Image: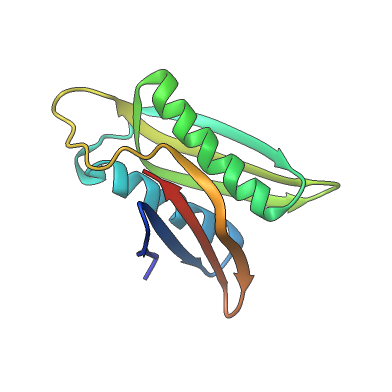
Amino acid sequence: MRYNYFDVTADIGVEAYGKTLEEAFENGAQAVFDLAANTATIQPEIEKEIKIESEDLESLLRDYISELLSLSEAEGIVFCKNEVKKIEQVKDYRLNSVAYGQPFNERIETKTYVKAITYYLMEIKEEDGYKLRFVLDV
């Protein structure tokens, strides 16, 4: 199982899993994409390189999902997949990834409008791989 959703009053919670931290972040982002649209019908026509630097892992997760949501909104892109190439800690935490998608059009089946990721109930645990937990404002 890559991810699942849990109920939160007026919002949607996400739990994402991965053998590595990078895979867990990928699966967390995929949960957001799959909630927003039918990603099976979206073509990876556009590539967007994303580089994020944050003071801790929770901020890195929030900043990463926020960047994906901002790019989608500002540039009219519906993302279908992402690859987190590397997460490393130098002084702060750094993430390099590539997100794939296509321009929004009327044939794309949208589902839920995701406004933002919140810090509410956010946690990142390392236990037999990694588990992320966060809440989306919808």
